[in-house]
Image 1 (cartoon, rainbow, N blue to C red):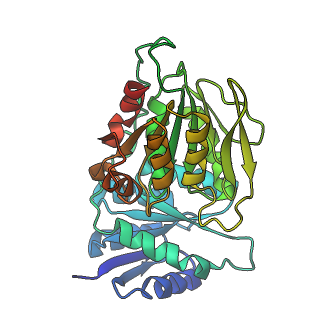
Image 2 (image 1 turned 180 degrees about the vertical axis):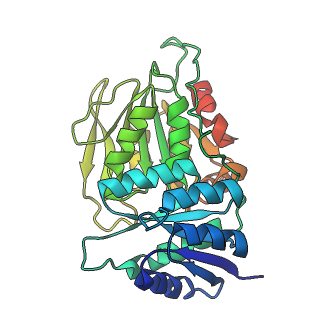
Image 3 (image 1 turned 120 degrees about the vertical axis):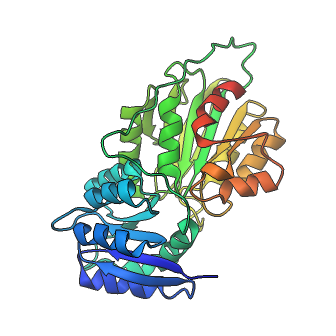
Length: 348
């Protein structure tokens, strides 16, 4: 099979060299070009037609966001953004995802330089996951916000589901945004979103979701009450669980345990707590992502009499987490991303 052809766009010569070395540490990846800024990047994207592009955000002459907009309009290609672990880096990242980038890798600028060698595995795995994936052209200036769905009101007697837990990873920010922005503000369930995202990004992501959604969205902190029509986003770097305090009283617990967990936050940990607090009354939703985090959480929701929903393969950036659930026979339904919100309303 032909190698994955990668184009690197970064204004730092050192970073171009480091990214090239890391990417080509995998024999399936070949760097076919390196560009010094966004303008050169757009020209090389058109000339080289790479399978994947890594794109820095802040660059002279033309920023990464400007270059992304041109590439997604003229030569649609899977683009992975390299973003700084700052509030501004988070905002730029979500702007890029909305403009068509398939994913991002966070760079830590807190060190003397930033040690991107620590994310070599993440870089390689994401390049391979999105390579040759078909992405649609996006015309600049025509991005439309989805309108919330008008829900058919259900009485307490006919509404079985009381809580919705959503899990996602690679490609998750854009997928979660589409789902949450379509849900109506008068939902009668609480919601928890567990998404693999660094600590510096989750607060900004919650704020963006809150701006785009009819629901109330916030980053979860210990003691937050579970309320109908309120969405709690798991903070990066920690674990979030739902705890029962009384007969109909539920709240959030955020902790560092277990310290050795591969994912922080972990979808399985969040979903298992939901299954335990709402036996037979929870809905688990698994969206795009690499790996199989969420499989055991979805399994427990199902075993305790709840319902399960998975994003379909065709609309996933990476069909990993949903595939694990579907292959295990746990998904009650699968649906394309643009129908996930409607299916959530249908299933509750």
